[in-house]
Image (cartoon, rainbow, N blue to C red):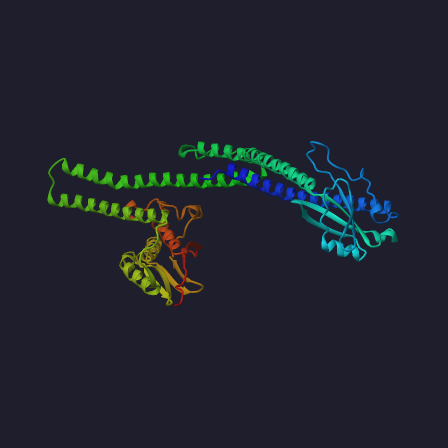
Length: 465
């Protein structure tokens, strides 16, 4: 994994190096312009001084001020010599300064400029050395030398040396600044990450047994407050999930223990002495009831476990929901008839995308619940309509759901009627129906009492092909 501290330090180092490099390049270019401007100014000034001084002299009588044309001292590391030479306008040498042992090279373009009465400039190589030259027309200072031009030149090595030294200094400073930026970046990253380290340490100290604890480090700091809030909310959800899981485990254990205890008790009592065939049969009937209850409970727990794990639905396909509702109604007619309860269904043709087995279970749980809680010789009504989606309403005419039971209506193992025999249900029917609806992208909700309980199942319609 990449280190944020190292990454930030590298970014600062690279950014600092780019910034210093850009400043350095700009500085070198600016210094180069300044130095060459100063050199040109010096050469032009010398040319004007020499031209004014020799304006009255004719031809070879022209003399240079040798003290002005400086020469480097012995052992000097920088060349500061200036050269001067008088030429005719057709490029013939006339007089040169004493520090010249040979004629300078007269640039043609600069000579043409001078012949036209303008000052000419040129940079060229003379005897393997780059020099800067100004060619000054003496016609600008007097008629005695109107056919002469004055050349003043200087080597450019001092400028190059200065630029090289300055560039080397800037390079060194850039490297030092880059190293400093890297070190500073690491220190800043360490300081910036210190709160996250403390938050992480607190988070790591929270275990399954201490989920009630919350993170408090740097919760009052704006930049980290939101992170602490998000983590604490996550811990709230985990704590709630663990509480639900513990409650679910306890309830499931209790529900499983009851039929097992009954089974064991009946078998133990029966085995204490010999029994008649009718007595053995009665015991086996009771055991069969408890085994059926265990099978229902195991099946319901498996459905809920799958919904908790967000297991995708199997065999999802276009489904005629009206036909499914009619099948469920037909299946429960005999159970309703035993209590004198009539089941009436009004269903429009609606197609949904879903798992037929799961939706059959959802609708069956709703109808089963309605039949159980309807008044004797009462009525259970089912209405299926096609609106923005498929809407199934299931209503009984019983006493309805008491207000104190509403918060627990879809809670697992909750039974609204404590007097109801345990063998009549597991308390998981509505929880399974709700999980099945949500697995299909729909919802199951309690609408109210009218006066019996009214539940509404909403499912998205199948997309048209």
